[in-house]
Image (tube, rainbow, N blue to C red; front, side):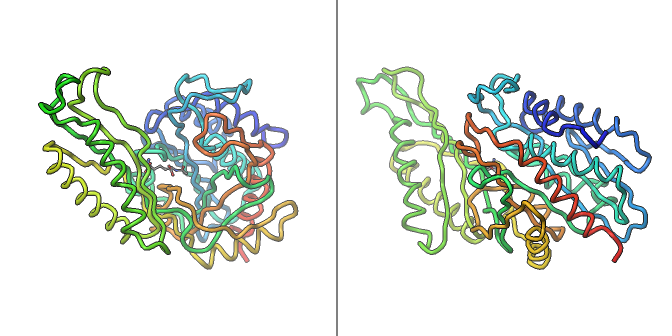
Length: 377
Ligand SMILES: CC(=O)N[C@@H](CCC[C@H](N)C(=O)O)C(=O)O
């Protein structure tokens, strides 16, 4: 199965069937069909919701090495024009999880045919884009029984060329919190604003005020982001809106800054309540812990990867992206790295089209690294 098997073809199959978090039913079935087709008595498979744990038993294990891939898609209508574009209308693999999955299968398949001493655990995790599958997966009995001693994951990076991996010790990805704010006032006729509490005006004021948190309340030498990605409100053009809703996300480089941003949001919301005489509720949705790369393992991996032909290691800066893999790294030493895929369009863009040559590069690198880490010295 391994030699000649096209993990690019697998990526294309998976690309056609993107599904939202915890609804990755076809994706899970596709992955299970593939794994069952390997028919190895050294491979043990357990499912959790739409996720999968796949353990390869080593010859003479002294530890378990973990590898995690996310499996969900995003609510984006694809505009790549690719022959294997999404068949699921409003959803797209616009964050590379199709790449991450096919790379995981490539590495896993290699170790079915080339066993090493240590155990390997492959985690196919749902709902990375939200509401988060890593934290609940960590709490499962399966994870308690099969818990890896070290763990790694990668994420595609459109801005780097194929063959480059980007990584740093310590903080790599930000703390995140979703942000949903609902405003309720008094609607009415567009010509009688004085008899209403207009929630479009209140919402617009609040969006402007939220931006001042970053510019006025966060130390300029620290970094934080508040993005309001969606505003809804009102019904038609000549009715003053009774309700409005803001949907966004907060990113910070420390847990302390996240608390500070939230406290300030609550103060500004209190001001909006008073100024506009309306009801306002805040819901922080799902929150992700920062991705923090354990220093010793990361440095060792960087040196190892540098010695692999065709791989260039770039020491990068931290990014304001979020990843619930941060929860796994909070409990298990390990690291995450960026994989260069050289796409003109970035993550979460309808035209993202990563270079598929990166799949083979990543499989080779991880095969070598796991062999190095998982063989008795
Ligand atoms: C790598 C990546 O793009 N991850 C997502 C994680 C989203 C977390 C959550 N839904 C939020 O929006 O806060 C990202 O947007 O960074």
